[in-house]
Length: 269
Image (cartoon, rainbow, N blue to C red; front, top):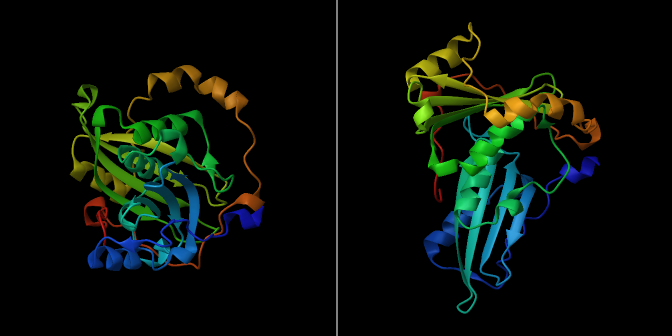
């Protein structure tokens, strides 16, 4: 199963098509320059041949600016009569946010789900429920403020992703800044996600730098509270090490504040 995580040739389906402009051609070349290390997680092609939606893990992100998001979502659009194509892309710190971007651009939600059985798994029901919230973003309640990915690139250390959002839901008015903390264990078999609540972005930054106090947890979604015990009893075993992602060559990444982390990159570079 180890080879199931090896990068494959991205299926852009643009053979015989030209970029709609020179700028799009340059941008597409720039964004896909290292696509030989992209690992496909999900893809969808419309029946009429006009739209392609792709979700990748970018294994080269670890060598980029510290904090760079590791997931890349693409939406390619084609004019099948003129044989031209256009595209947009988004870097996201966690898979659910990349899926949300694709869904908002017209991809069927079920087509954004990873189709290959590799990588770490959600460790519990709460993790899955919080991912569902980010994926669906009901009523557009979450606005991403900042994010930082801390992946040392060793099996001796896990990885951590901090995503700071502003929550517009009335129930969160007392603490509208929510820090979604994703932590992957050092053997990369599983990960957890937890939601912290803060009155302001500065307070979230201070917690991320200090770490002397536990994450101030937001109330768990009701559906999780009701079904957590049952889910814990019925979870299937985690995948074996043969199906795990192998980290790239090691680098050292600091832990800056969220406010100093690299901003989410939108559009073409």
